[in-house]
Length: 267
Image (cartoon, rainbow, N blue to C red):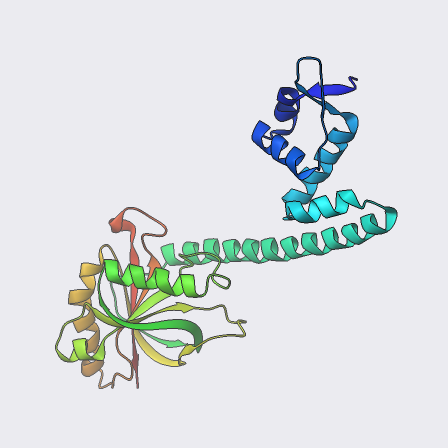
């Protein structure tokens, strides 16, 4: 084993750019010697410090914090650092576990959506659904998508994945009154049942539902059918029509694969 290594060897070995190695030198974290030609030569001690830097940077430690530790390295400071590392690792595990659960839920709901029957109006009893909502008057299509991203940005710490198969929009009552069915007054995310937060609720009750595949222009002819079916059955609508995007441009680039569910609360 050599006692000293050139900057190019260290850079290749650790995947660290030469600029970063020079920066560590400027901070005083690394202290390479110079050979007769003026080239930086890194010692075994420098390599040991690079191992520590790499491990701590992966956990999100700042260079200032790393320098502070290396400048005052002792058994006591190492024990304190190990406790801090353990806390950070536990936090990463918590975040990754939540992300894994969200991914599994997304895959499950996507499979369920693929199996959803289309083409006929059904009368269903649906449970109370907690939601996060953003109210704003928009037209489809790009404006609705922009509003969904705006809502996701507002709750980015909560909504890990955009496209969780529980995205929806409410048709504007004014639009329904004027028989204009591509006007919307809000978008929302349906949250998991065990969520302990929400700012909007889709109440439990009877709903007429109709699912279709293809572009959103289909809603313009199908929403009137849903309203007409309510009248035919002698039911009174108690909500505006709702669109829930079971499969959309977050899952596929092919509009023919889009799956939209229309819902209308009735009594």
